Length: 126
Image (tube, rainbow, N blue to C red):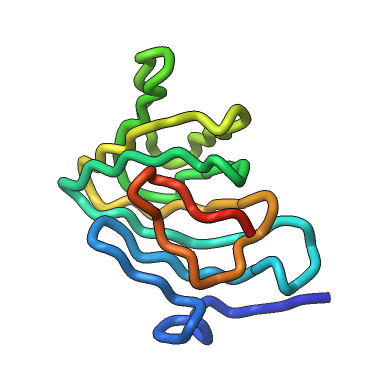
């Protein structure tokens, strides 16, 4: 059994920060679960374009307000507490934050832990 408290991972090598987001990576590839689990905050007023070419991601909104736009279809969805979206086709998407949002994210496969988004909006292959 793996039990972790997010408080123990803030300001460690598992806590990654970028211009538009802050992510505490609580479960990584090295944990052997086949997926990763992160708690991420995306900042109010930011617009982040992403496409995970090597990972599938599921996102659950815990707090805040944003929109997520599927760039292939043009569909835009409200992202508010209780809403989940899954990038099941490596979807290129844009998250536009109205307020700070806190999201719970799963990645398959799990990340190594030191990844940041490349110029293509993706994390490198694990």
